[in-house]
Image (cartoon, rainbow over all chains, first blue to last red; front, side, top):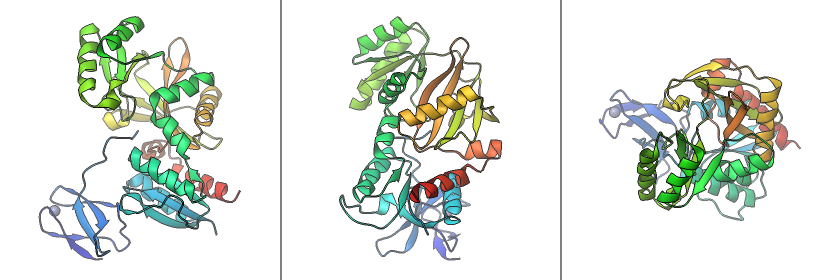
Length: 57
Length: 278
Ligand SMILES: [Zn+2]
């Protein structure tokens, strides 16, 4: 399992091997993180901004 | 083996379950829309695509792009556009003789208040687009209707179309039914004391009985809007019976699956793969 750094609290975050962009991970610090691919094509984490309400159920 | 494009932006439980079930039946290529570059008239190899982007604008534009590659998208662009626009939806449903709430469109604050007066209070005032019951408001009198209309006008041009709808005094619940192709695999009641019964707003969900009348109405609603995989919001009017409020073309279904025990994700996956084989 790759370990990435939480952009909010700085602590390590275990990311599943098969993680995909768009995946959401709840971190212990209380923030929901979104997996994305950075410019180098590596998996990275950013705070999830929520589902913007231009659609939904 | 059938190859399926899976278009998405956020992997919620709904999308994860779908991916899992699709992978059991087909070769799946996930396409993370918000980090992709999509060429109109580009080329890619796939038998069918399933659209699961939550954002309407991403869903719409990525669907038309993939359609330009000659690949069928479920749901297609026309279905997405019609389902998203509440006035368009109701117009098409009405033309297909499906019971819908009496709805007036108005284009200024004064005429929105006049429309509300015409319908009789309370009235429901919704934005033309968007959902989760967000920004839907219940106006109990003229003063409230005016305040809501004034607020909407400040939100941007899309909100300057005032959608004023009769309030249906439903029995504390509404119905969300899943439609997949020609079937209605499951439905739930969303029970709430609050007039907006969306589970996203804290309602409680219970399995609902799908009688033949409801089944027929749900399937006809989706067919009218070209929606192949949809969630249909229905209320029970004490006098008229079932009334269709709206159809969601990228439906969340995890509540329905959890409450009814029906594996909706697998039903959708099976439908999508069947369509690819045609
Ligand atoms: Zn953290």
